[in-house]
Length: 276
Picture 1: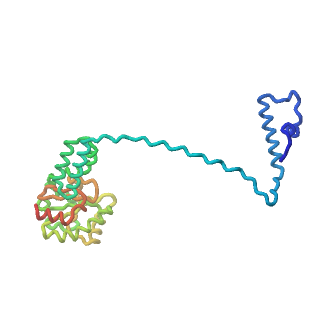
Picture 2 (picture 1 turned 180 degrees about the horizontal axis):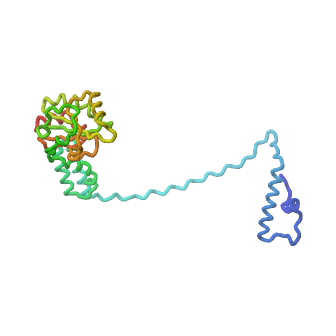
Picture 3 (picture 1 turned 30 degrees about the horizontal axis):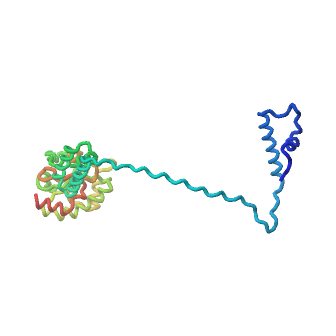
């Protein structure tokens, strides 16, 4: 390594300073920086000697491991006090949903109305808004002039009367992938349950980019024979339809069910047919 003293290095690089050129406090910093740069340049120019044969390379000792500081213990949060109204409302909502899934929508509506009256503003009440919207039509009559809202029949009407007996009304659209899977499954069920007195109609508004021709092609492709028609939207609104596919069930023109058609099992439909 180069052993040139700092002052000598400065004098080699810049010549000896005169007394007048002796650095002040600010100049000393500049002078020292220039000297350090000169020494580093000299050191970099010298070749690094190869280690002698058999000698071990010099290595820096590994830093001693530092001991990790213990993590602070988490603060214990006291449990929130139980809100008795919320607890009771949640239990009642569970009964509502179980009754709804079982298909007894008239009873479910009565329970839900009780929840709204006893426990307003609870989380359970807020969670049940969609169910309440569907159940709101239970007990309401079908529009008496329903047939005037039908724009076109794609299959024979077959003397359909929606105000007599048990009638399943399906609401669907041909662009809806869930609908195009659900609707064809009703053909076999229709054939099996019609002899027991079931009536069935599928209504579409033909929205978005769909056309009547799309519906005709779909009906032909799947060999559908139950009544299928285009409506003007009044019947969907009366049934509080806000998504597809949807279903409403009417007994003698009065709604007893509103929900997803998948809930309408053969067993449930048979029970309604045989236990009016």
